[in-house]
Length: 144
Image (cartoon, rainbow, N blue to C red; front, side, top):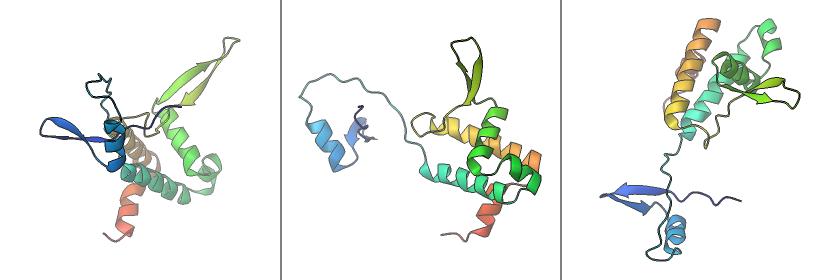
């Protein structure tokens, strides 16, 4: 099983642990040990939650015919990803294939990739359904 990532922050040209657990993990390594480091930036949970909230609102406001096609946010999400080409072919032994939508999991897309996907989904929702559920969602919630 893979170890969880140690979260670090760049300060004055050096990487430093962001919390005590990360410090303990780094401190447990032998001094002078060479490490392989993969630089990634954590995705925004807030943007991901907003994405799902908007899809949920879109589904709630579909007419009966469209809701029969896309009864929940997950099915709507899959339809958007397939339409936008966020898919891969899964080949079967017999030479046929099925299409599988890409994962938007936090460890599968960068923040920039997800932001682009979100804007593409949002634009398609406006074009197909005539309104922006994310804007409606923001307008209906008081600022914090």
